[in-house]
Image 1 (cartoon, rainbow, N blue to C red):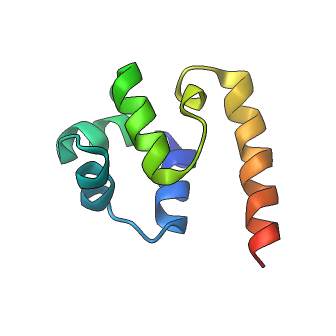
Image 2: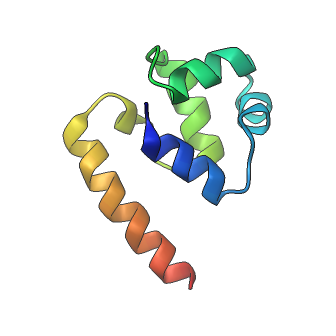
Length: 80
């Protein structure tokens, strides 16, 4: 499961359906990506990342993903 993706979605106050519609992907496709059952295509990764405001490469690079957690935590602190 991509817990980080679900967390970002929830922090943005969006449902899976919301993200899917805004990213122009099927809800079942988005749900499978969020649950880690499938990897997104580059196009879908870019669309989802655009909707949720993060770097799309996070889907494909573990080191970038680790950095994104740090970045997202900093971003949350800045909003407070």
